[in-house]
Length: 378
RNA sequence: GCGUCGGUGGCAGAGUGGUCAAAUGCACAUGGCUGUAAACCAUGCGACUUCGGUCUACGGAGGUUCGAAUCCUCCCCGGCGCA
Image (cartoon, rainbow, N blue to C red):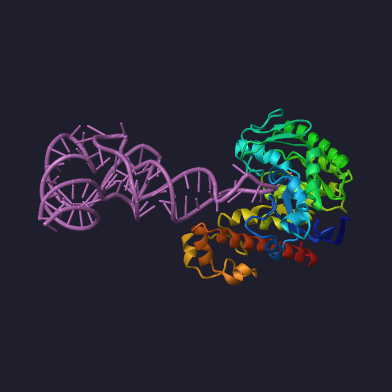
């Protein structure tokens, strides 16, 4: 059972309000999707993640395959039961790890660049620690060196064992440093893999195809047409899109214009609070980002007035909540002084309180986003 | 009182004649982080600067030396031991 209903289309933009129905309930879209890589939104219990307003999480095939292994997850009754999360779940395919553990690690870059690089990765180059072939990817765990192989078939097999409501096709998330020829070859491979994923699937779990194409409009459009024509239940848009928010927005618009409009679109790995309006405005329905929890553990608090480095000494005497306008349990209960103290003392509770607040903030921003679309503001 | 060891930047702690504005760690500050390799990474951290340097600093005061955080003398302070 998988369904996407569009409740309202914006007259101002490509934004739409919708509901995705899954075996584990509904997702009001546009929705923010917290990242639970290893079957946990770090530092938080599943019911806390739900209490913070999260509708759906995305777990990771590569990491769960590494530990504890899909067999153990299946034995535990599947991901939902394993982590005691009762709402919808997605699993990312491991395609991002092709980048993050490959060229990303080699060059110390994330998938988003700020400016044009001096050198680009030519076609035919292999990352240092992993090997990308026509059929799949040979990984080596950066933690213990364990060898690991993922392919469309393997990824789908694992994702089916994990049992999330929504799976993603196995792709290559290309490095933002890849040159045009590299991207062409990679895109072709990702397209071939997409068809293979569809072919080998055995369950009724929804499967999203992934559009790539880097910062090249023609490749993005080509990819969107090709992937969009395949019988996926929805679509992910991955990789990088250029050097600024504006080009990201434009590229999303081009891609979404080519995708079937009655199916949900997920923007992979993008979603700082300031990104929400244009992601939705470009026609995105769901989007995930590690930012709330990732930043929280480093002391960066997201607030209605921007970011806050809670570890700074000055907060030690500040009795205000993290965000005076926030309605979360943390802001109702604890002061900046307390959380600053905990973070400075490396107390785990500090990371947890910060994570909860940030997560709540992101979810609240998504709620606000829906309201604004409803009101015709976006 | 005698003996002995020691007093170095916000803290801890290297250095024991020039290559020392002084290792390293912590603390602090700034920047980065967008499908989690990440409770992480990078930079700065005496003052002034035309960024080439200049000045002030290693308990205090003198001294030796071309040159002292480093050697000598006295003083102050602390640990330990003996009275």
